[in-house]
Length: 238
Image 1 (cartoon, rainbow, N blue to C red):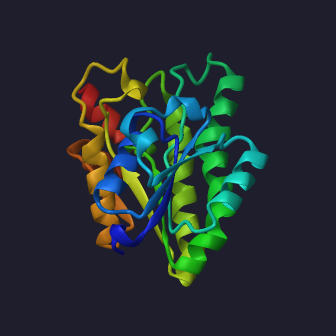
Image 2: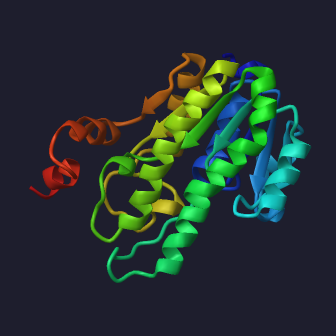
């Protein structure tokens, strides 16, 4: 795949990794990028002025909005499922309502959006990027619900890959540790730049890689799966 020949759709495109994806795709010569956002007014600066960017109102928990977006962007060849939410609560005492909202966005939102765009992606033998996390492979204290959604999204990614592969559609799972965005504002440990995540992903698409482990944290988390359950967390705590 050559990014310079693609038309992309990025969900959650107004900030953080999503915004970096829009910029990264344009920098590699993508012909057009649809920027999916809940509030179009939240897209500003150069992205809002670039003629190659079309802003699309999208809430991935709203079936009607998803269908409208897929109808608007019938020429898409790369779908980046980036939109997501996080809460920090105990699995035993946290809000189940909040947990269900996490699953609605991080799992079912990704699932339904991919289904809606699948016809266009199949027609163009395109690609899907599911923005996951190293946390798909372990469950830290006070973040279990979010970890569960990313673990479910990892499994979903693997299943979608098998179903879309016969049509020539590549499905990439993108994993990384903490990234310097508003999403991880409360995290005090080392963080990588959003642009590094995007560069690794897009190079992975051009190299036909179905899984991209961006940093040492994601590689360690994947490797720890061969050990005891939640081994990555235990290594850090030890």
